[in-house]
Length: 82
Image (cartoon, rainbow, N blue to C red; front, side, top):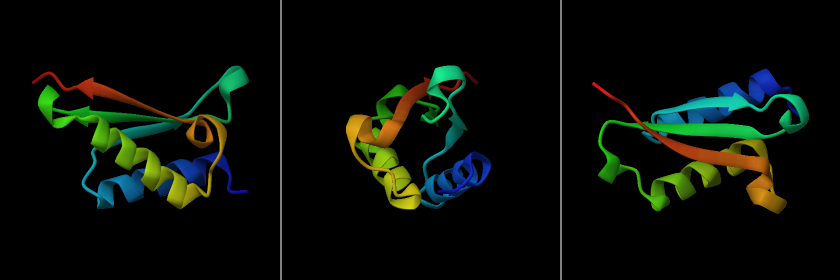
């Protein structure tokens, strides 16, 4: 098992290499094991379910997570205001 800081960096780097701009962090409290990915986009139509699904697949591949709730990986979308 990889420590949380290293896992977060691995996922963030893998998403960046795939062209997905995202914030990656771990949960706190009772959700400490969850990996939270927030996809950052400038236009709403560019964030689709496919890009969110792709982010989960990349995170699962990099971390080795699997199982219930997509391996405890949560993906959200945030529209950047310019």
